[in-house]
Length: 247
Image (cartoon, rainbow, N blue to C red; front, side, top):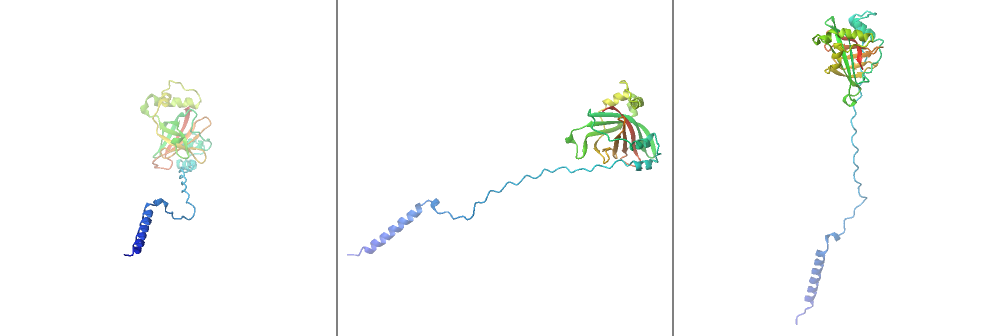
């Protein structure tokens, strides 16, 4: 009779191996030990701070009008009482002008003297200062736009009656409403405007033509020097004294 012991031993070993393999196959993958991690978990990265909002750079105030240089260029007498030299003399004693007028729309008229090509011609100069929102101006600029122009001969009666209006305002009298120059000045809505800012000494600088400088006299009159955009000579430009109609 054959010896069955070795067969039984081999069968038992085979059966045990099969059970072991089956048990390993049925074990969930999640039961395996996770690899050990060293150290503490990393903290979530912090949100970087927002970039600073760029601010507008400060703008340096322009220098005052060089009165001495213009007097020399125009060969002004020290006691000049009329013309461009009288306007320049007034700059020596006038005070700073507040271009932001209370009403928001101020208007002036006066005699202007335009120096060009060595000659001086007369004209009726008119000025408007219009208040604008602060968010419409740049750094250092005043919230006011200033317009400077003249009443041309083509305006007919407005030009013809301009001198009468100016003389009335010079005397601090009330002009008649029938004056056509007054009517023209009040109704005009088209102006060549420029932004304004204070100079080092408190004058008002207007970005028009080659640069315009304005200061105020004792009776709310304004003294104005507008440098020519294209200067054939160092003294060329407009020199005017204008009187308030509204402010």
